[in-house]
Picture: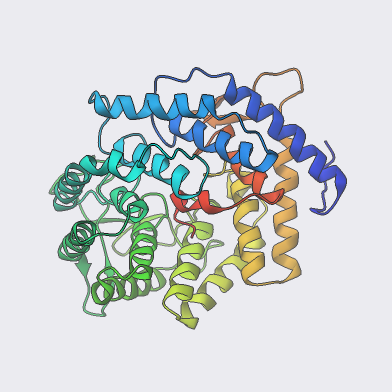
Length: 404
């Protein structure tokens, strides 16, 4: 692989196609049952295969149906928990997404009616988790909102969403300045006597709450409360920004903590947070938030040293995630710096490609070692989804990352 690419070059497209074909065959060779999650298992594989099939005109969707059926059966048999990342909410979201985007079609079934019985249980679980302070959209309460947004609008769905927003408002931390945030429970590791801890990130923190509230606001759900919470939370995030660090925003903070550097990634740090400011600014027509997004991403474009902690290519926290997000920002704020930064991180992504004879196309860095990972969040499926967009495929899938 060469080290520098232009996105219009035949070499880049050919290399993308070669890598995508390797990823596709690696994933296609996996069993179609077991581990029925969206972000780490069967439903994630089905999503990647479906997008790949559409882009390259492959008509045989039998294996995709096997993965979907296996995942739905695991729900029916009570094998899954509620969560979005690894459980019912994510599997059901993936199933509806495939139909809503026309990636799967069957005139003899109604996908909405198939998942309808899940609504009440997912809602009740979300309310209990919010009452305990577990708002995390991947592993806690708020992932159900993404599922409800894929459901056909109805008074029942509207009622569920309105109650979730109200509960989220009730458990919010409010400051005299009008700032609003939520305490981070650190995945259940914090006790009642622990000092307050706040997470800013898009994967587990306040940025994710703002992004979800923005998507709900866009669809007309609880607009007054959503706008109040969005405005207060973005004010809080801007107020706690770093004063002199390289990164604009910290990752996780306690009261009166000094500046904290954060990584350059979707999950934590300036890239994901800037996308949330941009998303909210566009949907609520707030130019100040859009300006914050632009300032943040321009500053982030200068970070190419060791501090960015890029050890693999994953969409969640690796080089292709950076390239993908800088590409989105280059469209929102057209300028050479952002486009060149996208190209820089794309070139770094190709450096992680494994030799042609290896079954693994990319390896994920985990716990001081590299290992095989095919997942939709931080493995080969995630990389494949992003590469497909460079060849012109739909970006609708990025909704599971709260990017649009």
